[in-house]
Image (cartoon, rainbow over the protein chains, first blue to last red):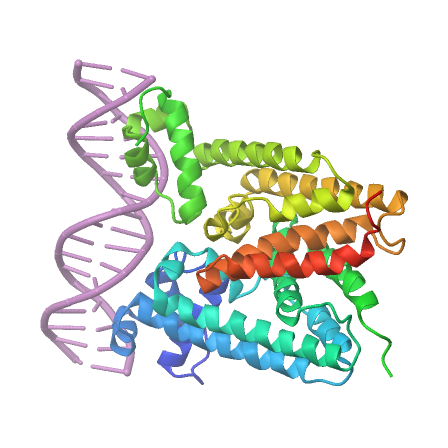
Length: 195
Length: 195
DNA sequence: GTCTATAGAGGGATAGAC
DNA sequence: GTCTATCCCTCTATAGAC
């Protein structure tokens, strides 16, 4: 339940974001959203066309937020390798999973091009962003010449997304960190010493 | 709808396995299971205590099957690196995702220790299996000495699980393969030439 | 063992009062 | 804009006939 410093529309979006993260699209009911937002049925159907419309607004905002957070880390100081390491080691609520990536396991999200679009665009943007970082490092002679930026980027994002799976399966964040350390151990020898 | 060469109990389990894979636990209703199995309500509640009980039987079987499939690949011919490569490149219905891993995004599965157990045990077994393979290669001087088996194993499994996420987000298996190629590119220089 | 009938609760949406 | 009332359908389970 949110304080009244937010508009009803805002409270609905924020409640939906939380529930999509916790329970996914299929597992989230309008009733649960309304209870958490402290609003009635009428408010929701006044501001949004229905559950899919509200979910779309929530997903778009979550996607934007993720991009902003990642962008801050990736444009930070250091060599390409160091910035990738900063991304991989950044603080995360590992057991909650990725609010964007988890939606790919939701049948109704995948079945809807509109709901899937922001998920696709965000993960695609992330891969491109990491790929150009790898290419940058390669051109500086900081990464092994035989590496392909897009491939390494996909492996990095996949390790993170899969790390959430391992952590949630075991009920502990440890597996996530173990996988990240493994990837960094493979990535480090491929990176020249910073100069 | 299954042919009558299977018992009703079998048909119920198989239907449940399919639906859990396609729609997850939250997205799967007893009604949908019964329709697919061509059975009535009574049959299900005669053979199983309810939805969680039937799901447990289905998840256990899926987990067993996955272990058997993976074991076959990992005990195949070749060096440790080659066997890991065989595991990573093995044929997959990528867009369907991992029938075991996808359950970690299901709130009701994660909330139940009983339902989560087979998921945890399977992914844990897989990591241990890959870890000992990496260690084996390291002892043979086929992998760089500084690598840690458990870390590399976690990175491998995470890349696969995350590869499904990327593929489903983009609606194409390509991203999965790209990530696998990236990981293999990082893994290959760390492996000595086969002798 | 398998079926249908039934039931209470919740999902998702609409109508209309205020 | 927000509320409550209402609707039809589905969810999960139980009861009891065959």
